[in-house]
View 1 (cartoon, rainbow, N blue to C red):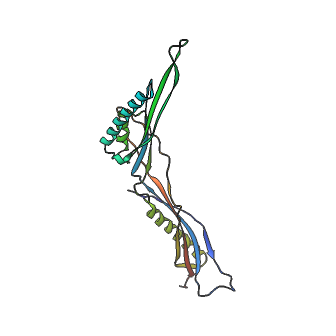
View 2: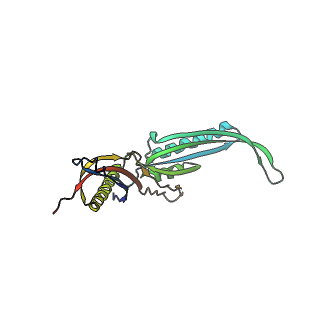
View 3: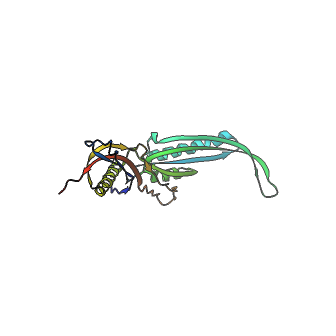
Amino acid sequence: MRVWIAAVVGLISLSVAPAALADASAPGTLTVDGQGSVMVVPDVASLSLSVTRFAATAAPALSATNHRVAAIVQAVRGVGVPASGIQTESINTTCGKVRVGPKGHKHLVRRCSASESLTITSTAALVGRVIDAATGAGASTINGPDFSFANPSAGEIAAEKAAITDARNQADAAAAQLGDVVTGVQSVDLNPQSGVAVPGAPNATAAPSTPTTVHPGAQEVDATVAVVFTIAPESPA
């Protein structure tokens, strides 16, 4: 998998003690904020689907919905989704009066609906087949997929490495402008709020005769570090 690294110029500050109070033996320091990012291909996909059925009373509407949901569960299990990847979100029934019949001769009838929603979680490579299986088994609506990572820290180490490299490059450039050189690292603070920038994934729909192909793309993982470098005057050649 190719990884793209982008670095963003951070902020640089030079710690200088007043001449009267400075300890001649204490090294000078540069504090640099480095930023880095990498592109990582997600390996987990989730989608939500629902089934709705109608009847004159709630019980048969719910029974019909249950029958269809059972068929969908069997279908997605058949393409490789484990039982742990199938979760019921909601079950709802409603009843009311609706007008039916030709214009000018409509009359009220009782109508009930029952709906069930499921969340399906699978590997990103499998999600296209999951969509086709659920649609073929009678899902009324499908929303998703949403992509994520099986390993929540995916890409973080590479992003932090890029951020540290960015910080060192900035420190070298700033020290050179001051006639100094970087001599070491006093401390490194990894930003606990570094995270994943996830672009919105388009909804996927299934065509009855053409297999659904889902493209997970790549998601950006960002990291920020604050590094305190020690510096010293550059030795004459």
